[in-house]
Length: 243
Ligand SMILES: Nc1nc2c(ncn2[C@@H]2O[C@H](COP(=O)(O)OP(=O)(O)O)[C@@H](O)[C@H]2O)c(=O)[nH]1
Ligand SMILES: [Mg+2]
Figure 1 (cartoon, helix red, strand yellow):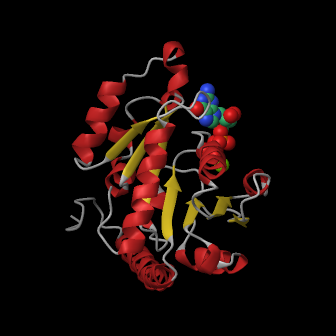
Figure 2 (tube, rainbow, N blue to C red):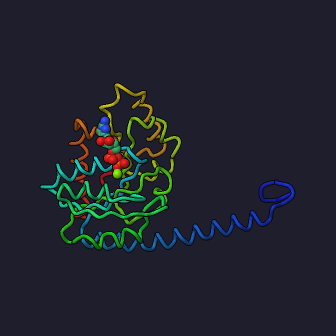
Figure 3 (tube, protein in one colour):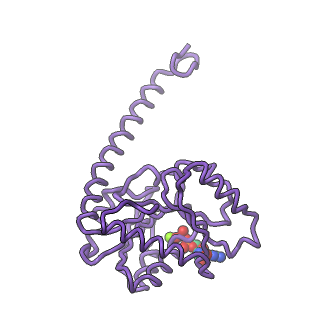
């Protein structure tokens, strides 16, 4: 009888392979953490607030960024890194607002990593930047594990995705400082229990800051904007985060 998992006969080679995989993953994450620390030091030197924006595909991340840079562009200087497997659609959308934007294509990759971000920001003039938004690849799993050197992780969840997502993908919600529940203009048309969603998310991370927003009719957007401005002020004054 195998002592690791109780299987019979013991498939030793499988356990060896699993150990090797764990070691490779650990090495990858260690390397990522070192590069993320370098990014973080650089962003702090430049007084830049960095937001890592996460969600599944289609929740409205790019729309949120378009609205935010348009409405706050006179008060804060934004730069936006866009992550997708293919196309430059999202960077093109942000560039159309007049905001510096750069697209990172990950090919088959399911998340951005600190190395990509370190090179991505070479396309911006960092001393002219107050807030860097990094729109991660749409995926509620892997991006949670990769530190990019951000100050805060913000997750967008739209009401069409179901109120139980915090329970199904707890790692993402545990890692997040902010949750934006988007598309609440669609609430009359979908079965989404806002109170239950809040309860599930807060059960996973009790200090999670939650905004209920609609990028279409602008509900809740001013609260998000005020929070972002306060977070930037706190970053540049060296006080702790407002998350
Ligand atoms: N009804 C509604 N649709 C939205 C809202 N925000 C974004 N969308 C739509 O959702 C779709 C996906 O948006 P996008 O920003 O590309 O999502 P991303 O994949 O997370 O970047 C687009 O058709 C948007 O117009 C919203 O607040 N309400
Ligand atoms: Mg997008």
